[in-house]
Amino acid sequence: MPAMTPFGTNTNARKKRVYYTEESDIYEGMPVCYEFDATANVLNYDKEAGGDAPSQSSPSTTAEGYQNEGKFLRVEDPDSDNIHAFAGVVAGTSHSNTAGPRWLDIYIPNGAVVPVRTDASTTVDVTVLGIASGSTLCASGGRPVALACETVNRSNINGITLAKLDPNMFGLYQNGVGSGQTFNGLTGAVANTLKNVFANTSGSTCNLLVHTTVNGELAASHNEWSVLGYLAVSGSITAAGYSRAVLAQTVMSGTINHGGAVACGLHAQITGTVTNTLAQRCAAAIFEYGLSENPNTGDADVIFLYANGAEDVDSYVHMWGDGERASVIWKFSGCGGLSTSALIKLMGTGGMWTNTGSWMQIPIDINGTTYYIPAGAALSEA
Image (cartoon, rainbow, N blue to C red):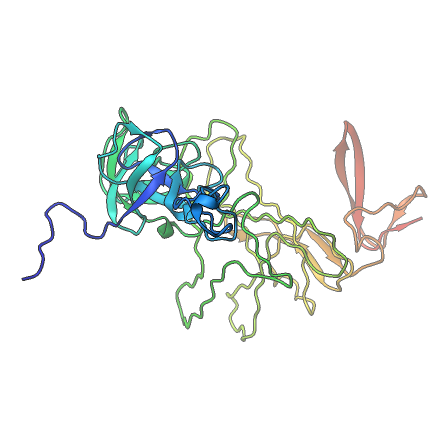
């Protein structure tokens, strides 16, 4: 006869015995992290020294490189160094109202639904709970480790809520000690790869969707990023190459035979409406734009604020609104020659400006003084 599952228990949950090194009060569902950088051991035997334990000068410590069991048996409160080494949450109530250090049981984060301690009011299958430095709660913030599995009001008192304990369900979290994890690929390394082939003949295709909604009242200084690209190059550069915080590249090898088809390397767009007339909507970006051959006029949708005179290509700045693209307002072509490799070029202090056709002047205000930029075809100094 098969064994009966005890009523009211989760057979998916797995417990582990660990040594809690802190002095905090212990509660059911309290999160703990491994002391991954520990030199203190648990077996009271120094593997580096060898011999008999009584003859060792410091048997309670084990040096790095000698497989210290303390790294996976000793746990502590979350802090800025160990937050990536989440061990689990305290299991059961047998240790409640006591303080460490002491041995205790924890639920390991294997995806099981277990009680976690929180100060957040939770909504079933909606509220994400995380751990943060200095906190002994799974709060609604920090590094995500659990998803609430019941709706509980915790606005007045901290307590437990059932949650699916699995930090891996929230995607990437690669943040080691100090500046982060180190890849010793001296000739190059790729940290994460997402490479798929889609055989679509219609519809939409996307290899990575990043959808961010910020719905709080932004009443103080703030920043929002749906995607943030940050590149720090601290070594010296002694050879030709490229340093790019973000690289967007579209490689076309098929045949485009439709007037409504649009191809671009990067499409930056701001849409929507605002009620405050003082609000500014700005789409400004700097790109280096290069093609193997000149594009046909009007074929490229490119926001371009940098003219690279070394490339024999046409470059454009477009402005558009209400769903319709305006005409080209700035154009730079090639290098050398008058006004072809720079937006503003110093021409000297000679006589009047002349050109072969009609010309215009563009007023600009600098510190209260009005200056004029002449614009026309084939300008030359008299």
